[in-house]
Image (cartoon, rainbow, N blue to C red; front, side):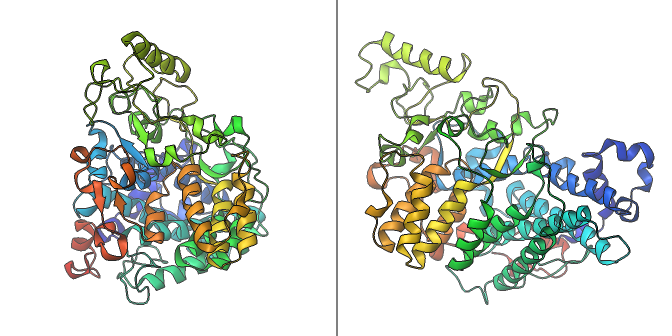
Length: 545
């Protein structure tokens, strides 16, 4: 962990607590906020857990010293996974928050960029607080109540979550490298310690230990509140889901399938109306885990929906409508209702569009024979989706992600885990095991609810199933940030020009327009921050990716 941060543990704890629980400071002076006070009993430890929850969606400068307003943590990190790989495509040149640099593959390849720095520090901030909680519980003087076990389970699960995020971004993919020798990330299990990189295998081993310990604690823990707010708390389903992701990323197919099935228990698939409602609330039936974003939290122009939703009233969206890969959209069957949220025939109203085809004068869509028809189509889209006058439209514009209050700057919940993902994990794992019928069954269970004509028995080999599963993941999970890890697991590069093209502009996307597959291209690995190398005595410049 960063040695510079280790020298400021009380300040980090103060930031987390004050951003979460104002009443804590009503009874304890600010200069008395120490680990001993903050962790004196389970009620205070729950406040620290709540601080970790809040830190997932707060602007990073409120979570740790040296943060930056341009990165509101998971508001940014979630869509980044699809921005890097061309799931979410920019249609115009808009550089808000440095997002243009993300799609051009500039930020994560630079060790002094705030993307590489803040993702690293945010995840290790989670680990620090998880370690503080676990160390306090290990002292053994607290009564082991169901509520304390819930706190313990969350601390283990959070540490595993952070380590998995770190090793998947700052190390070579488990399935495409040599995990026994490839450098991983520091595994820190004791507060205030630093550490060397170790190996990818060592990191994965610790994640397994933590997830098993989380599951064991949760088995006798108090249940979380059954509400939108409650879904921000981690529980046994979340731990099973994290274990399914961990196992999938390392090719432990049996564990992936089994844990995915356990994770989705009690979270039924959404209806068509729910699926089309915008993915903006944890209230949706299949949401297993998500951040319940507080309306007063000042993310606004730093929020997930500002980055990825075409309904947000911000310049980054108004001037730069987000589009989906047209190769994906064109392949959606007419019988699949998910295709309704993508608008391949939306007029290109943006005269600054990267493809140079914006405005009536450049219209090539035969649906619009007159300028009046062109303008009426724009007006119709704005009316249907609640857009304001300044919003532009663009072919293949996506409306899967929609705010609860479209045309506003309101932040909404961030969904991290849902049942559909678990079915797709199970299908992929069973396919890789060449268990054809179980893979078909898992695929049918999810896709059959979206596409009335879908028949999974048409896919009778591992190869056929995997091609369909890849398509279904790209469609079902569009905009939810899985593109980066999927590409690494499947060892797939990026080629916006192939097979008729994605719709992205090569002039705009630059290096992000084409990237070789991860197994032969180390640019997929995030750089270790310069500050970490300079401050951590156990990491040197020779450890850089």
